[in-house]
Image 1 (cartoon, one colour):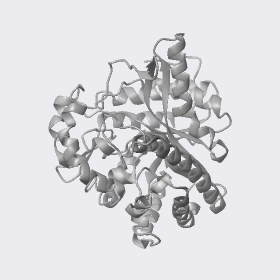
Image 2 (cartoon, rainbow, N blue to C red):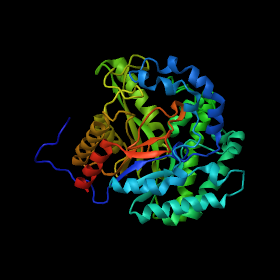
Image 3 (cartoon, rainbow, N blue to C red):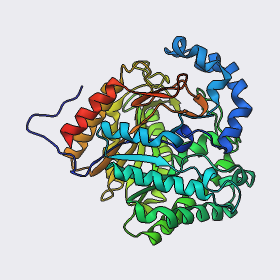
Image 4 (cartoon, rainbow, N blue to C red):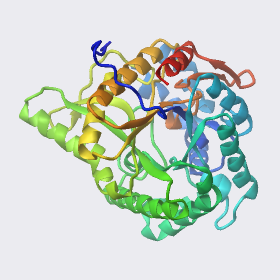
Length: 429
C-alpha cells in the first residue's frame, strides 16, 4: 500500500462528506418501470447464458447456482429499503457516515403521465427528514437509469420532444424538495446508459434496455441527456440558488498498456476523450461540483483493445486498482480547476469481504495524495450502503457495507470492513 511521507499530513475538509450511495430501483423493491419489464422478459435468457458469460471468472463456483437461477435477474422486493429505510439509516449512523446519496424513483412519483402520486412524494419528504434527523446529509439523485414505462413508450431520451416530460418531473422535485436539500445530482452515468442501452452489449452483464444497437440512436440519446442536465440545472437553481447541483459520470483511469507506444497512446487518448471528457466538457458551465464514479483502471493497446492485468480481480471479474483513483483525481482537477470534486461512487464486489478494506484504504490514500497537491475534494461515497440488485447481473454481486440476507427476512449485518471504515471516518473527521 502507498503511504504518505511523515512530514505531509493532508487533512480532509471539516465538512467532508463521508458517505455511501444507493439507487432507488436497486434497493427499494416493488417498483414498476422499464427495468422491471425488461427483467421479467429476459430472466430466463440471462440464467441460461450465465455460464457462457460468467463461467471464466474466479468467483464462478461460488455464484454458479444463483447466476443460473432466473429469479436472480428479477429485482422484485429488492432489499425492502422502501419500508426499512429508517433501520438502514440507523446502521449508516452507526458507521459514522455523514451523508447518503439516494435516488428518487420517477415511476413511483409519476406512475402515469401527468399524474402525481402524493403518497410517494410524501415518502421521499419523510426520507429526507429522517436522514437529517440523524445528522446525515441527504444527496438526492434524480435519474439513475430507470424511467416510467409510459415515458419509454414515447421513446424516452431518444427524442428531443420528450425532454419536456423530464423537465416537468425535475420541476416537481424542485418544488417539493429543493428547499430541504444542499446537494442534488441530476443524472447518473449517462455515458454508461447510452452506451449499453443503444450502442453495445456489455459482454459480462448482458443486455440493457432498450437493447437497441444503433449508432444514430446512441448519439441522439447522449446529446439529449446533455440538454436534460442543462435544463435540470437551471430549474433547480431557480428553485434554490444555494443548491449545489452536479452529475455523476462514470470515469475510468485509462492508461496505455505499452507506454510510449504510439498506437497504444493514440488509443488511450481517444478513449479518455470520448469516455471521460466528451460529456463533461459540454456541461461544464452547469456544474457546481464534478461528481464521478470510479471502479476501473483500464489498459488499452492497439486499436481500441482493452488488455487489463488478470490479478487481482473482484467477484465481478473486474481488475482491481483502487489507487488508480489518484491519477484520475488529478486529471479531473486539471480539466475543471476551481470546481470541487465529489467521488459519488467507489466500491468493490466482494462477497467474502476479502478486499473491501484494502480497496477503501487505498482509495483514502489516493484522496490524501490528491489533496496534498491542492485538489479540492468535498466527499467520498462508497458503493453501496447495502447489498443490492446490480442491474443485468442481478443479485449475486455483493457491494454492500451492509450484508442483506434476502432468503431470511432481509436480515441486515454490518461487514467487518465496514466496521473498520467507521473507525477510519472517526479518526479523519
